Image (cartoon, rainbow, N blue to C red; front, side):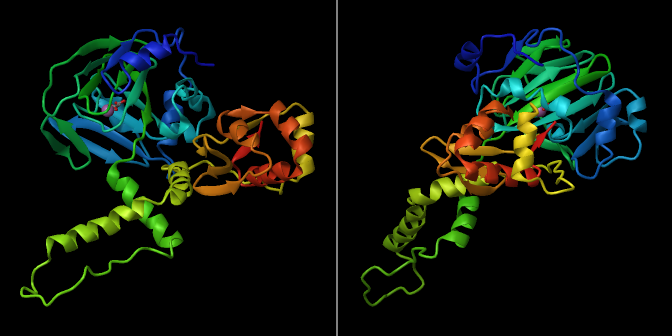
Length: 375
Ligand code: SIN
Ligand code: CO
């Protein structure tokens, strides 16, 4: 449905995580996959994260959804933002697919904003990479190179940065794509009522990784290494911690990360967890293995639920991690790429299920959990 119109390898070499880029007509003949009233409808739901940003008497205001009314959008200078729309709107989800030239585990979600003329969230710096696609209308965007800038709260829920020099200064038109690496200041204000789509990427920081790894170890590592003393002598200064003791403490901490056997099961679970709610619909009646075969014979294809995260490791495709849980694919490892690399699958499943009834049983279980569905 959406096809990128630029040299991807050249983009990756020159720009990815290095510098901002404007890709004029990155999508040719771009058609919005969602209407403004549909977006507003989603912003009325409890399950979605939404925000309204506007200025009142010269001061920035931000309200968190869900919203009952959208009076603010009747005036200029307002923006409605809805997070993880790809989880709830299959047509909007199509817009994430062209960006799967980067691995799924790095992709976060699709945020969609609607702005009335002059609407924007103000100058700011995000700590993630993002592609911003212009839908209907026009918006004036300014983006600076990566730089350190003072940041401050323009409102309790709105962090801004100081003024910056723009490396890109452009009026975006439908189908234009702006790539903004993490750490680059940017601001965009609508020229006409405007829809913007943001495909965001996630990169965990050390604190995210270590706290999650420690949580995993608390549950799974009964043999946690404990501090033991260095050879002891009578201490003249009992209030003092000796340097060698501190070093030994540090050593015990570092040893915790030297457990390669924990790395995959922990990271697979962590990275496959959804950050935003999923639109999970459990089938009313349990689906049986025969039903799956019947669907496939009817020519149906199975689609992975929007936003569902399913990953496997290069060196271990028999362990598959789906929505924070580990599944054993031993004996039918060709099912892993089929479910994790592809958004839709059909004919490959028929082949795999022919030889491996356990694969069919497991897939049936996943369908009953609402993770894959047939149209
Ligand atoms: C917006 O669409 O208004 C905000 C997108 C962003 O700056 O990250
Ligand atoms: Co931003």
